[in-house]
Structure formats: C-alpha cells, structure tokens
Image (tube, rainbow, N blue to C red; front, top):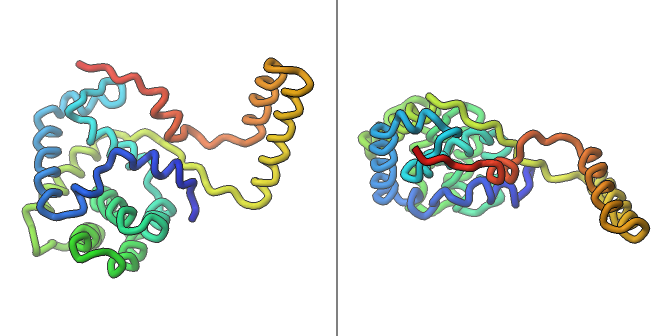
Length: 219
C-alpha cells in the first residue's frame, strides 16, 4: 500500500460504488449526471467558488481527478477488495491513461462478473476501443468525461504510508509534545505542535484540508 488508507477512504467516501458497480444502475446514474452537467454547465464551470447541491457528485469526481495517480489506482486494485476495483475502474474510465491498464487488467479476474463490465469499459477507454456490450453507455461516460475535463480539478495530496524512519521520527515528535505539556501546559503544547507539524514536511493540500476549507455558495 502506497497511500494512507484514511485519506483514500475520505476521498472516495461519497462515490457510490454499489450504484456504479452494476451496469443497469450505473447507466441510470451516469445519464442523470450527464443531463445535470449539461443543463447546469454554467454553474458547474464556476467550481470551486460556486457549488450547487444537484452537482455534488460532479464535484466529488473533480476532487478524485485532482488526486488520481498510478499509486492510487494500484492501491485500489489490490488493497480495497472489489469496492476498490470498482472505484478505480470508474475513475480511470473518466480519466483513462496507459499507466493504469496493467493494474485494472490484473484486478479484473478478482471481481464478480457483475462488476467486471466496468473494468472492461475502463480498459476500452484506455485503448480507445468501442465497448460493444453497450455503446450508448460508453458514449455517456465519454460525455461526462468531456464535461469534467473543462474544469481544472483541485490539486489534492493523499499522504503516503510512512516508512520505518518516518514512524520513528513521528514517535520522537510525539514525545516532545507530551513533554511540552507536562512542563509548560497548553501554551507550550500548542507551540510544540506547530513546530512538530512544520518538521513533518509539506504534503500540499490534503483531502482533509480541502473538505474543511470549502464553504459552498449556492447560486
């Protein structure tokens, strides 16, 4: 596993894997997303400054696009059961790239036949081939991808799983915070916490910070 599980789950918590995992319900879901995205495109284009509840799922996907990487796809395909494979295939279908192919291809056999269709569709999008089982559904996915591609996704960093050296450093810093509390009370603790966070390095904007900083404005 490359990325912190709690960050990955926070990122994907609003993506309905049960709905998108089955072809019939996914088609209904994507049809509605395309309809709403096209009808409300003027509002959608104002993300993130303006956010409107009927477009919430579009916003969630844009956040995912901002965090999408080969490491995320790899982790989802190997460490998050069939749910992770569904999530990975959905994101890759909307942002296909060659580096994701091997991960999805390897995961294909490990999921139920009810979910394999989405992996096959995502692989078809990577290869730019027609997905014969439902050409209409593939076209809907492509329309949704076009809608989302017009908007710059937020740059969101998913923190990496710390190595042994980083864990050791974190324990040293934790002990310093504890000592500051015992010796100087709350003020000393807060000062030490700020120093400790600075020592930890800059991850960029994490998914937690992004969610906390958003104050949606309804048009």
